[in-house]
Length: 103
Image 1 (cartoon, rainbow, N blue to C red):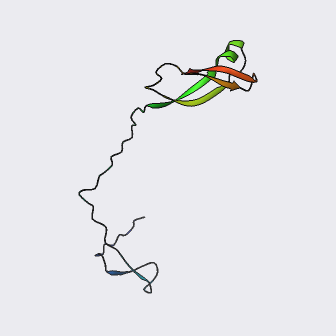
Image 2 (image 1 turned 180 degrees about the vertical axis):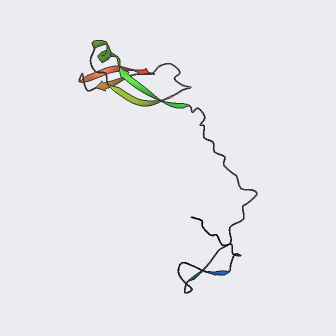
Image 3 (image 1 turned 180 degrees about the horizontal axis):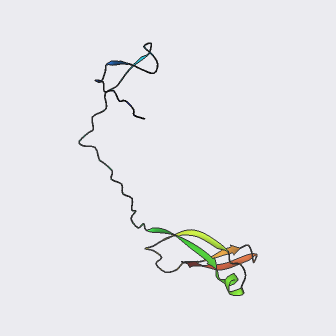
């Protein structure tokens, strides 16, 4: 289906073919782009950020052969380049255990 596009000078009245001859509306002029305006350029690929999302897994439950609990958190790549190690609650074991970062 082809759409018919009618070009009308800005500020002139135009009859709407779908509403009959009783309705008319005005077309406003498009704003002119400013030459001093800053244009933001976006790209599909993102740069590597400083903060990354890591997964922490329970080491005690894994060593005991039980189901390890996992947590997701963020870390700063510059401040902590080594693997993250935190004490978190393991609901399967019912106590606080050491959780290490996994890849």
